[in-house]
Length: 101
Length: 485
Image (tube, rainbow over all chains, first blue to last red; front, side, top):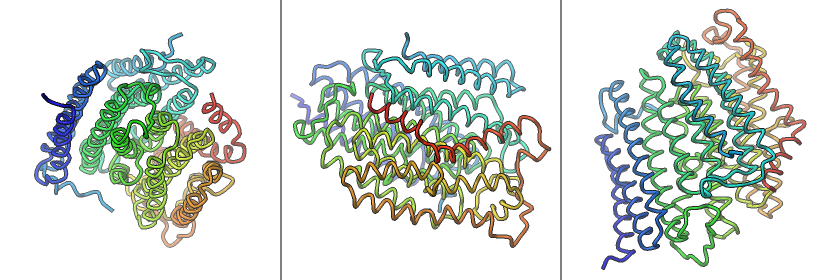
């Protein structure tokens, strides 16, 4: 039987992979988009698990909203990356270092 | 009466502006006038609802109260002013170097959609609406920061804002999911944050939520995006971002944090205290080292937001109303200072470095005087409104027996006045070179009536800061009444 705590640990691991991926990745900005999706999926897992164990539908409804917003976010993120690629010709993380001080 | 009418009208207005832009593609001023008139009408509709008692709609997911009314009225008004200021910069932008023609009708649609997100956020009654409003304003702002499409700096700032903003939203959501698990409800009014009873799960969730909130507010330790975005974005977008968005993010802090936690709690208080004092210290100290005026103002904004959090920390009616007053005054100052800078060009591009302001006070006496007033107000020197805002916050902090915190905040804001006064020094005491490269956008092709009106509104905005410094009672009474309701 899967307990609540098992799901919570799973989603915490997903979250950590997502955040770790963003900060360790130095190669490609697209990977960052994937990691952001991972973070949101961790949140979704959390919500569904809580909704199931609390016997409350609200959490699952929230998940639909998060999925929709995640799609919009990915679209905007890809558009911005496209813009960056056109201006710079590269998507390497180390290359976006013009702004500092 | 429909209590969500202002939001519905704002959505309709955004779609209308989109269609108008399609019909009058070459005449962008039509879209601008439609959006200004529409926003004015929405403001009137909203102010007509002033006597409506507090109520909620959509099964408690949306709530209307006096705080929402005051915050929404100020965001709409500030947005209208920001659109007027943006006009001259955007319509001249084709002639600047380093930019392309940025005067396109979608700009106004995006601004109105961002405003809609902020209004939903301010009126949110549950975590769903808070999240949707937050994302709606953030997603449009990511796009607006990249408005200068051909310029590398603008897209780099947008990427940084997008990546860090998305992480913050993710962490905020993760916190929300834990809070939902600990309390079993999404409605903010039903959540009783009794930390002793619900145990560590709730506290864990609250920490994540605070990370997300403080990121969006732009306070330490999640402030790193702020200087880059202020620097990289087109300056009219920075104007919007640093004024209207700050008021809305105060709404986020108030709804998700201040209103939900009934009693102050040692652990949550400690977190807020570190954030508030850390922001005041770091913002004021790091700003001294800045040579770029936009980065300088970004660090100054971190320090000012620290004061807002300090007001919220007090967790009494007095504290909340002083924070509310502070954030509105700060938005007015920020709007004025970025708008004024957006009207100046150095070698036909946006103002960036502090040194580029040399001799401004002699070349353009009136504009120099306005910038002087703004700097005095940001440094909180009486008789400006900035002084009164800081006084109120410190008064409520001392009233809550937080003497050490008040002393630290005071010392570092005195240190902070150094860099504001340095701007004044560059303007008036640096006569070494007659700065021919510095030009004023509005007077480039001679003054026409639109330019005059814009200059008049800008002067009014800035002189209002002096007026509110001498006679602040109406706004203070309004913010106190909103909190007491």
